[in-house]
Image (cartoon, rainbow over all chains, first blue to last red; front, side, top):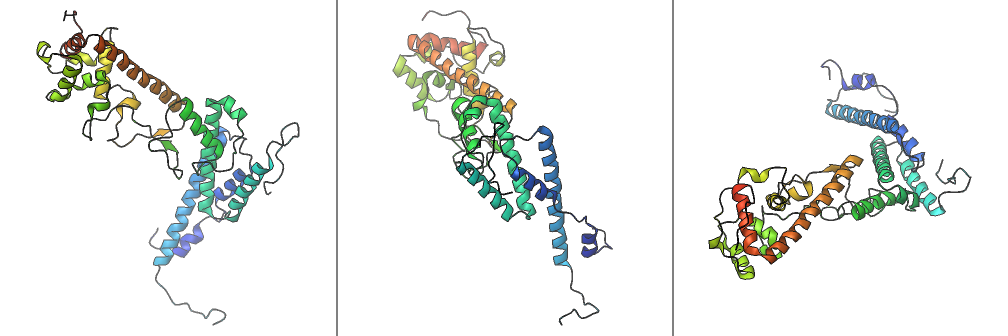
Amino acid sequence: MQPDESPLELLRAEIEQINPAIILADQLIRREAAELLSVEEVNEAKNILAIGTQEIEAIESHQKAFQKSPPSAIDYVPVGF
Amino acid sequence: MTGLRLATAENGKPIFGFGERLVRSLEYLRFKAKSHNALYACETVSRVVSEQHKYRLYIETFPKDWERSTKSLYRAGYFKAYSERTNEFFQLINDHRFPLLEYWHDDPELELERFAIPPMNFDLCCEEVDFAHLRDSYLAGLMFYFNEDDEIWNYFSEKYGVDKESLPPIKTAHANIWKEKREAKAKPFSDLIRLVDHSTGNPWLDVTNCQYPEFFEWDKETVDWLTEAYQAANLYFKNLEHLDKRIEENAQTFFYQLISFWNTGKIGPERQM
């Protein structure tokens, strides 16, 4: 984390996407199990798994950073208060 | 897509029965209920890839059994992390290749992504040595390691009338006994000592219960290598059967030759006993 970047700025900088493992899992679960994956498909799945796991770890670190963030007052009253 | 669609072959006939399709659908719905959970998705990808890897190995190793198999590709088998079909593969490995489903591998919750093999040799490291259930020839090999222990000598003296005093004294092992290439006469002795010493180079014979188990991967090369090694390991025990017969025929000569081999690295001329 850069010292001048807040957890919120870091989270905003993340790419907005659905975790690719979710998309792949959906494709794999629809597939007939008897139709074996090719070597290329297995390698691709392993790549996506690595990306998906990395994304989960990134989210978890953002969550931890937010939990550690000190509270600060806002300069407006939120609707409903 | 619910998975309830009828799976059909090229001729349009359904492949799976209703039960199989139902299990598949339940599997799909289980996934769908958690489909936006990235952790679960990663687990699903990992599980599908792992299972596919084992299906491929199943087909390569037992193609006819795969064709005949009616085991479910979706329903969990005895090892709950795997389908009935993968469990069938584990069973086939155990029945036709090498022991797999014993020893450490009896817990249905276990994941068999890598596997250990059970030691076939006798452990000398951490237990009190119980000579009672050993073959005579193995016991004869052990005497080099328990030379000060009279128990083995007493056993052979009582059973075969072996006279220790008329045999050459046991010295330090000659370096030549570990030579890889052996003439036919010396090989049975060389194999016996390597077996007792746990230095055969064969994983089935050299691993013990006292060490952290080596884990093996599920790939064709490893499965074939372990299969060959298991067959070779059994030959070592076959060798013990032949050596037992030689002890029964003439124990004194046998011990004379074995000790000569240990001391000099060669059998030498037979001495008349």
